[in-house]
Length: 112
Image (tube, rainbow, N blue to C red; front, side, top):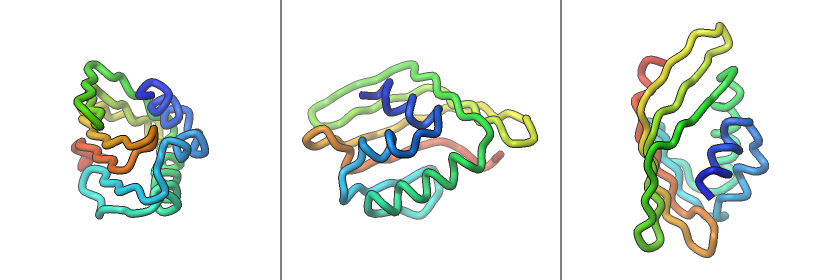
């Protein structure tokens, strides 16, 4: 699931990304305000994906306690002016019936 999830983000395939989300998903990305609902998350993530030329995740560790998936690694953002920023990230996902119900991303995006 994690490999396919990050592939959907890195290829900017918003439809594939949205297929991982429950209808009532709660999403928090870095210091963004919390977003609720699949359609709202899909719109916000799509806008962010389009603001970057390229996004590349490298997942280094992943744990699956109970109904959670926790992973960490590095993400490289390539801006449209071709400058790059690489930062560490950690994600906590609550999964119920194969869908993400709570999606928390921890990364310092202040340099973006």
